[in-house]
Length: 490
Figure (cartoon, rainbow, N blue to C red):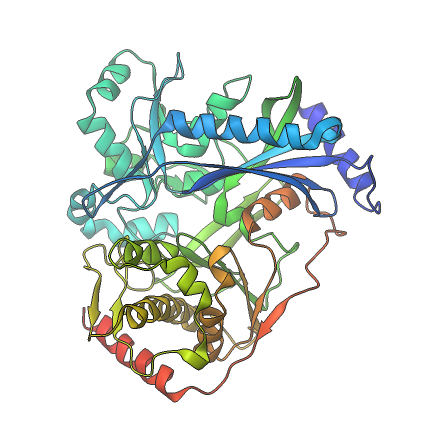
């Protein structure tokens, strides 16, 4: 397998400088997200050649339980692979490698012998074991020091512990010594690859809050703290390596990269720029940058590891981005997603309410899982939608204030929600930084392909960036100031 990987790296690098053509190799980027599984075929220059999309279901119960069906996710990936193979036709033969990116902090338990799921997939949005996290609050500083993460029920450890305590099939599998448990990525590798690998990459391992970036392995002390035996967890490996063989339309192709969705999205535009804050806006919004700062209100996140390189970034998290628009969509009678994208500054309400965006719990820099979403002030449905969109901008800008330094030159926005001009305008105006928007809504897949190709210098970066400049808006600035004061008093 190692010889195969060395051959693949040489092959991709030797072809990366080609101008394309029907014989250039293709990579399959498998992006398993909260709404769908996507497979995108991308060439060695970063050009998308074909894509497929299979939606998945999300099951919500109360304010804190968010699940997916593990079998449905596997089936959705297989369907997406079949669909893209049919789209490619004879070009299937050009596919030489694949990679996998998944939702970080989502976990699942399964039978290691049969591969059968023993639990639902508990989403990264799930906070069902917040009570355990509250009891461990005295250890918050230790957890932050060891992991770079704020103690939170969003991460995997408390959810793994809940499964061990509450699901009888999980308990029995543990007794029978056939229990497998861990990040969603590990389950998918086990289910999709011929070798049924039982491994985990750094980006997904770190989001369990059981992984120590200094040793790059499971922390025995954290495993004991959360009550999750480390011997049950997958073997820790690098982001890049010989994970195994993926069956694809009658052939076997090596899967050589596994990482988290936001860790991959960071590389959508090629090599990282220290002067840029990268913002990917989907269900949640995630800000990442290269920084030597260590603000305890932000996260230190692993972005990539291959045995020679180990990269970490500073990260901010907004749980309620598109998820907040989903929340409003269930409560009012308009298509909030379409209306959010159609919002215009010239037609914006002069005095909309403020929205306390507690969707999925408030992420950085406040870290509150107990905040109830609510409006402060009245207004029409259109005004409420504007307030929700502005709350997303407010949370993003609060993080930018903590992340930026004197060298920060711009925000580079991607993801489906970046299509909102009004949102990008608000971020630029309130942060004082230009926002560059790439025509690359599938940032995770593009970044994953860049990593599969071993970060080639010839990677095609977007030349059609749309730029939003800061503009004076006293009313918006006043609403932001009032919102910050309200958040500080929560």
